[in-house]
Amino acid sequence: MIAGAGPTGLALAIDLTRRGVSALVVECQDHLSPGARGTGLQPRTQEVYEDLGVLEEIQAAGGEYPPVGLWEDGRITSREQLLEHVEPTPSAPYSNVLMVPQWRNIEILHAHLQNLGGSVLLGTELTAFDQDAETVRAHLTLPDGGTRTVVSRYLVAADGGRSTVRRGLDIGMSGPELEEGAAVLADIRVDGLDRDHWHRWMPPGGGFTMMLPLARTDLFQCFVAVSPEGTPDTSPDAVRALIAAHTHLTADQIREVRWSSVFRPRVGMVDRFRVGRIFLAGDAAHVHTPAGGQGLNTSVQDAYNLGWKLGQVLRHGAPDTLLDTYESERRPIAAHILDISTRLFRSRTMRRGRDLHQLDIGYRESPLTQELRPDVPEDGLRAGDRAPDAPCTTADGRPFRLFEAYRGAQFTVLALGDVELLPLDEELVRTYRVGGSSPDLVDSDGHIRDAYGSDPAVFLIRPDGYIAVATPPEKATERLTEALETFIGAGAALAAEPLR
Image (cartoon, rainbow, N blue to C red; front, side, top):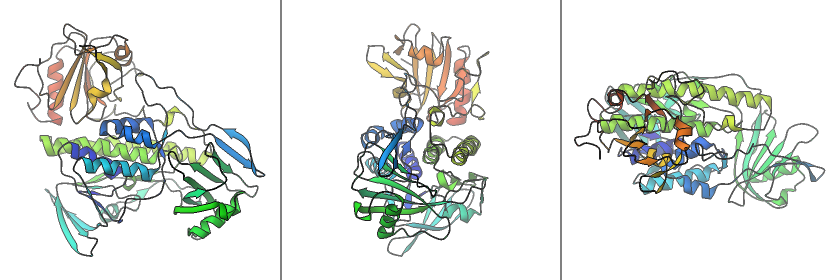
């Protein structure tokens, strides 16, 4: 069971459903969450979305962030490009932040989940739960007021910063103190503003207002800093009056207030990501400031890390201890990203670059990671790192990318050079040979060599696109089968028939 149908819960449900795991998603609201909220999808999240099968629709719904235009005396007096533009490379095909309103992001994920045969129970509130050594019992209140108890193998709390599940587990959330602040956040339709700028007003008395034209819509996301005292009025008329008081616009120019909310910055992370058969993910486990656009992206990648591990345990008999690595891998990363976003928030700087793209995040210190090659430099590609993309061709000359090889629920073996390997079960592990006497892939332009090195080697790529094992060719099969026992079970990865 998954509590919460935001980006975290939906991404996890998609990942589990495509693995043949039945996942029940419950959402206490009677509709999918509205509001643009987090709008930036970092390059690593775009790679995740490609694997989950939604990137094409996400790209069609998204766009680039325009330059900021600063208004003074009723006109734009200066312009600044806040997001550094980075050219794509063969190893990193998605190199810039993509703007997609969160409500549209959720709609696309939900539609894809439905296409896979999954669904969300809207208007269904998880009110209580208990667990034993084998199951979790969740007590639900249904839209008609009735109740239902559902038994599942595991429960994942993806129910946001005010998580009911986290409170039920009595797990606290701690983090650094931030300067008290508040803002009114709204999605609006407005007359009198171009869509070529991210509009900003900074009145002499302090505070600021920003309006971002949301890609592929006629909406703007409006952010108005207000006094932290009391509770701001977010009714449509109050929002119109607030915008008129902080910009050169009149209230009549705000044609519609589609959605509004109060934002108060806070930061925190839980001490535990797992309690028995219950897991915390996304905002239920860590809450970020909006600085740097890290919160939603970190949350989706929580789901991506947990999904394949639950799939291995529930579908392929991997030991339950594999699930302990969810916390040991994700908690340090969440802590690191919290530090970055908090520092950016306190600095008040808005310029953003490649260091926030999350392409350099990895699991070198994970118990699942084995770097067995000698003398690999620290700045070289190592086990635990994200497995890079690389354009190449198949043996018959068809254009191909390594991300195509890695796509799906399986593990992938990438063998560089003329390497002897025992056959592995192709439903669980796909093997691609580069070079040697009978290659599957031809690296005619050298992109695989540039990304993975020129020395003969064998890489085991996890389903979430990180390198689990990097080994010299000698005894590669032995090393791979030993590692796969952790993920699949003893002997399960060996094929009955030789590889062809």
